[in-house]
Each structure stands twice: as structure tokens, then as C-alpha cells.
Length: 336
Image (tube, rainbow, N blue to C red; front, side):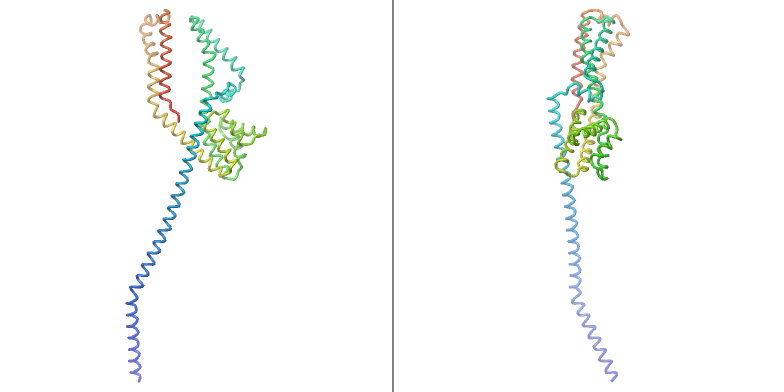
């Protein structure tokens, strides 16, 4: 009985083992196929998710690039309009003195110009120059040289402002991101900035104290700093005040645009430096040759100063030299 039970149990075990092996053999292919299909589905889902993320990132980059290009195009249009406006309406002498940073009145400027012209003419008369030459020196010394000096100061001050303005915008961006309002950011530049940006932002604070808001005060900055970049800044502030938006991002984009413009100007200046050096050499060559000839043969050159025909020759030469210098200057100067 015991032997029969063992035999039956063995047969049952073998049958069960055979059935399990047969079932495993039949179902193994299906199980592996399901596993591969599930793994493939997971990979497809992961690839689809990555594709969606990549597409979203590309869309964001395209939107940012489109927005940046739109801002740059708008700034270029505004710059053209500002240049046309500046060409049509020239500022008065009072405004130009403010732009140059000179703390004198228009009357003082004209008195100083006349005094300078008379002193220059008197020195030429003492040196023995003819009356037409003395009159020309008086005219140039009274009306030409002082105005050229004012224009020189304006250009130098505008260049110093452009060098510091992007840094001031960066300080404003960091201040606004840290939670400070726009008024406090402007006050920070007005107290701790570099000249001449510090003075211009102080004028914004002073304009607020007399009743103007920040957009109106920023719009008045163009009167003392005649630059399109200042107009860009005023328009950004005005748009933010009217329509809202992320001011820190707008100012940050403006700072990047200003730095790119400055980089392009520096590149153009470096590329045109060879032409400028050639122009300087060509312009100075007649004077160098005249000096060398005078040192070797003084009597050969003195006839130009003693004979009236020599005066006519030198006058015509000065006119043609001025025309040549003006042409070369326009050829090597580029507007960005």
C-alpha cells in the first residue's frame, strides 16, 4: 500500500512537472513578446516625452529669438526716427551747453567767444599778418573754434555716458530683481553711479521732486544726452508704466543690445584704423615736406610768406586740403 502510494505520488508529480514544462514552453514566447512590447512601449513613450520637451525648448528659444529680433528692429526704427528728428530740429546753444556739461550761460559763452576771437586776431596782427587774414582769424576764432570746442565736449560726454550706461542698467536690473521699486533703483544710480550717468539720473530725481513722473523725467534726458540709446531707455520705461510687464527683463535686453552696439562700433573702428592712419599720414605729409624744405632751403619757402602770390597759393592749398580732409573723414566714418 505504501509502495502504491509512492508510485501514484511520483506519477502525479511527473505529470504536474510535465504539464508545467509544457505550459512554460507554450507561454514563454508569449511572455517574452509581451515583455519586449512593454519595453518598446516604454521607450516610445520616453522618446515621445523627450521629443515634446525638445520641441517645447525649441519653441521657447524661437520665441525668445523672435522677441529679441523684434526689440532690435523696434530700436533701429526708433533710432532712425530720432536721427531724422535731430536732423530737422537743431538744438539751441543753451541746450548744447547743457549737453556739453558746461555750467555757463549763453551770454557768457558768446562773450568768451568774441574775446577769444579778438585775442587770436590781435596775435596774428602782431605777427605781421595781412588784414584779410586777420579778419578771417577773427571770424574763425569768434564763431568757429568755440562751437567746435562745444561739439567736442558733447561727443566726449556722450561717449563717457555710453561706456557707463549698460553697467547702470545692470545695476537697475539686479535691484529690481531683488525687490526694490523703480524709484529706489534710479536713486541708487543717482547716488552711487559714475559720471555722467550719475548726473543724468540725479536730474530724473530732481524732476520727480517738481511733480514729474519717472517716464516723463526719463523722456527729458534726451535733451541733455542726445543719444538714441537714451531714447530707447525712455521708451522702455514708458511702455512698462503704461502696459506693465517684466521691467527687469526689458532693461536686461536693452543692456545686451547696447553692449552689442558698442562691440560693433569698436569692431568697425578697429577695421577702419588702417584707413585713419593713412588719412593722417596723407594729411600731414604736405606740412612735413614744407618744414623739411624750409629747414634745408629757407629762402625757397619764405617767398610763400612774403609774396602776395604766395599768400594766394597757400590760401588755395588750405581750401583744397580742407576739402580733402573732409572727404577722407567721411570715407572712414561709419554710422552703426
